[in-house]
Image (cartoon, rainbow, N blue to C red; front, side, top):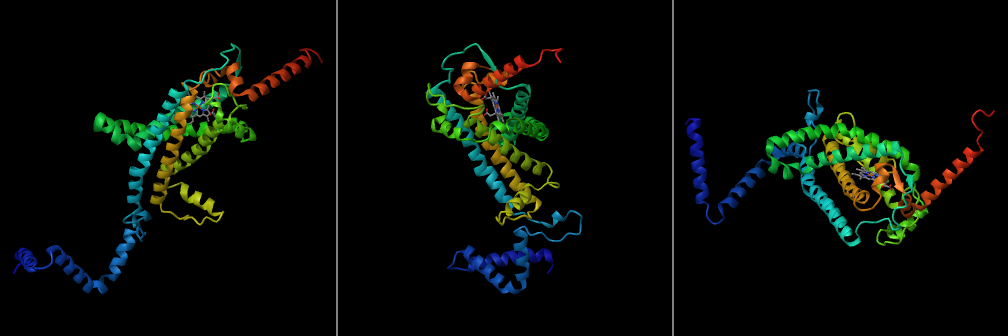
Length: 365
Ligand code: HEM
């Protein structure tokens, strides 16, 4: 009998056998047969199944080609990563942003715009100099560009793709990816600049507790808790932007340069100094998956916070935008929101005037 005839015949005989096996459902019989067959072969297959288990668990074997990563045949954690990224992470991100927009809308309806209680005085006082404003807008503009292009990477295929079609979406996403990669360096520079310029004004102090105890004065039209250059709420924004910005930058660099820089391996090694016992020798795939999740979580938290920051810096509070626009704010605004800072500025001006009066006139020796 040749092979061509044998295979259809074998199928016919097997089908007949299945039909003849009464009592149990055919599927059960078949699995029973399969299990029996497997049990009989077990001793011979034991080694094979160990190998298969190791492959499924992502164990790295030996390969003779230079790319040793090719020794990992199946990276099972990839499934978990994908499920978390496309599931809870994406869902929580939307809830966070929509929730914050909803809260701000509610706050606006209930409280309205925070006005300068005593009206504008017409006298201006310098709040931020040119370098400070440059650093702020460098960070802000690059963050917004990174935020929009990053959101497209996470949600674009659900939001943009069905509306603009695959060609336009792929062109936009490709351009967005370049923007995301290159603009990240401007953001990193901005973070370094604001850290250096403003760290001295953002050290937590006892005064912050008073500010918190009074709810920052935002729920009352007549309460203005005292604050220096930055109040406790602004200090939270500052530290979130600086620490979150550093963290998002490092995890982003790990994604951009996976061969050169392992963010999690290095972070875990640093934490292990305190006895955490975290795994330091992650594969490159594990590194990238963890970095991607961390990068997205931190970025989404920052986005939610920054939505609130943009609200308060624009529609939420009268006179606030000028601080970062022209750099000059109305004295009454400054007295209501940063009374101790105004005292400091006035004191410095008084000292400078005194020094100028006492200074030798030009030409004196
Ligand atoms: C259109 C967008 C934005 C507007 C209108 C805006 C407005 C402002 C204003 C008016 C201030 C000064 C507040 C004061 O005088 O006390 C400020 C401060 C600041 N901004 Fe922005 N900003 C924007 C986006 C951003 C972004 C995207 C970031 C960072 C990712 C950022 C980070 C900061 C930080 C760290 C401060 C100092 C701390 C604080 O005042 O909260 N800003 N911003």
